[in-house]
Image (tube, protein in one colour):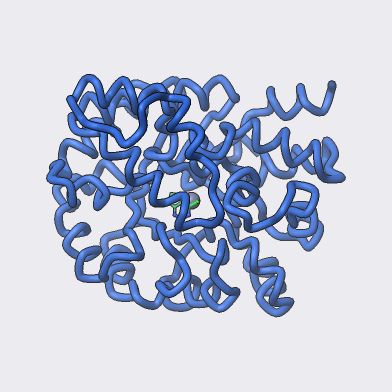
Length: 322
Ligand code: ES4
Ligand code: ZN
């Protein structure tokens, strides 16, 4: 119908996508074969059958196992090129891609292999693509600082840093020093907060880490004072509807709070998070939310506008999209 066509065709930015989460089961098997890596699953179907998650941690265990097939610069290039082609087909005009270097350096894959493969695919892409390096919050801050140090020779290849992986028990303030160093390097700052963690984690991401966007942030609604602040500051939330259903943050899409967040005046965006694991790329996230919730063409245009407004792109180019 007309709304679906609008959602499909409208130019949009994607601001919350983990590149390792775009690795499709077919590519996992192809890379395992190419690299002689042994997988714990006998077939693409058996692997896909394992994609039944009960919470964030149950997903992360499989997501890190899937990433174990990535060994060469070409592997990282191929994974990223496949995502960028898919995003382009969804009329994504600009994307800011998370990558998790620690997932790979901990396995002995050099930092330069990871970033060069991902970055080269971005250079060859039919849309603009920037990189945001994420620190794994289940590891120590010292490990994050060592990763930031390791990234410095490649400082010109990424625009910012983020914070992802297991949220509860690893509050933003654990990473105060590494974010301060990143800020002093002129890097843009984001963090996952309020996905499974409480509103207090969103507040400390803002106050301690000084982030410029909140990834997820859906639990902000539990604190009216926080909502008022996020609206006043027009702090963007990068919401990922399919992710939230697959990881049981909400039971069903009809119970998702996306419409309520928008209605409160929050700067909400729609994103895919880990599209190969959660059942769809960015347009599938728009379709699923708009099918289940009372959202119309005005909301669609607002969400697309918000995505460019919240993007780390130069103001001139931003104005052309708004
Ligand atoms: C993630 Cl959905 C989600 N949450 C936190 N960390 C992540 N890394 C990849 N996907
Ligand atoms: Zn995420």
